[in-house]
Length: 285
Image 1 (cartoon, one colour):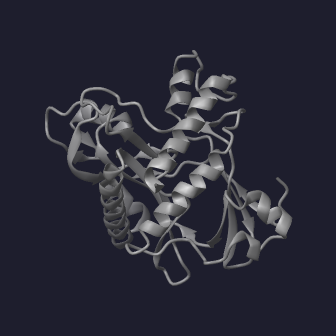
Image 2: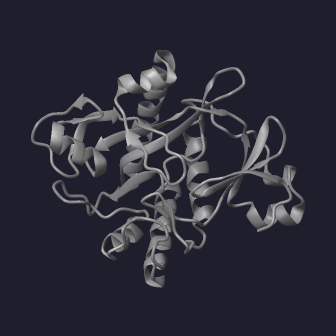
């Protein structure tokens, strides 16, 4: 997939290309990262599916806050042949100044949040009711920020006070309130489609006027945990619509979670693609 624009960034999943001082091209690849390691084996069509899910949510939640869309299509900025090759996995985006924290919202208890809760009764310093178990629904969604890691490093959960220290009191409040509103509305919609959004991570940036803007990807199976309403059961770890197939296989493979990762079997990759596609179909049909 050759692109004639200058590449300015390559992340775990997305590549960014320079268009001009106000716009860039964001391309979602088929790369998969697990435990902060990029695997050698791509997941076919993953970038296209994730882009379609993100674009669906960007449009659906646009009344809450601005997003990174410019209104331009890839055909406006690339030669026809290049644009056709990546049209389903690429978006022309505003160039924004990223907010330097991960904005995580949790509606249910699992993962690192469950570990924190078991040890301290809190997540990121927020006190939670006693007696919660794996997959318990929280009394209300909570904002649990983490520090942004470089590629290959692990994000670290931080308290809200630390979030304020890192990005400022006013911006922290805006980010928290926007993240909770976005999650709440999306979670209510997803329930009508048979999907529980357990938790999710939002990325925000500031435009040239300092306006908080939603960017990157939104409410995909890569940035969220999606559970099926049908298989959800409190006290268990519900199966999810995401790379959990791959994560579970890696967990059981004896891998030490350091690069390089072992080769993922074809059947695990196929199941993962099917889960991503199922999430897209359920949400958008």
